[in-house]
Length: 284
Image (cartoon, rainbow, N blue to C red; front, top):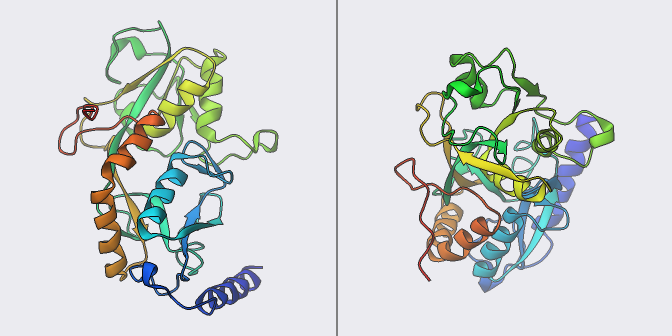
């Protein structure tokens, strides 16, 4: 099966090469990109980041990049998980991953375009005033978290593991196939099955707002640096495509206000570049 998929990937990549001549508007795109298309690697069901209907914030940011390049967007869809980079950028079927944590070794990253942090999510009115995981009131609480993520290590250091509810990083329950793991955790929180959750901020903000339950999202700004609880997010391209990276960096700089506006519309907790403080809203 792997060989047949690889052969198909190679054939599709070849088709993209010969699909048409490159136009003046796309001179800064990778060699494999056709004259009028920005080929984006995306997950078809990973809100609020991306989905097939193209209404995630990464979809909207991809549209901003395409607008700056004066091309259209075409997606290559693959569910995030092991092999995502290898089977997207690595096959040559697409040319950019819109969200990539800075320092990811499998890709070459652009300059970061936002910084965010893991966040504590609780039902409104519960445990008011908590700002960090070291608050003694969290002892013995059922805290939902995705297994293998940095908060698990921090919770272990603080003795919060015994009551923690760890969720598998990839959804295996076929009855919830259209729901991300983060969405499952927020649903369980709203239903009272857990007392709190620790989730990646960009997921937490949007999911809390969509949940139908009054939830508070508290970015974890006062945790120690190890394990890291905040990350800079860039765009990922193939290693060695330096001109493409520089072109993207220019767009990220010139369209920063537009990109920031999208992130705020999706309730992404935005941090200052060099300190753990929430980024002040842009002045009108």
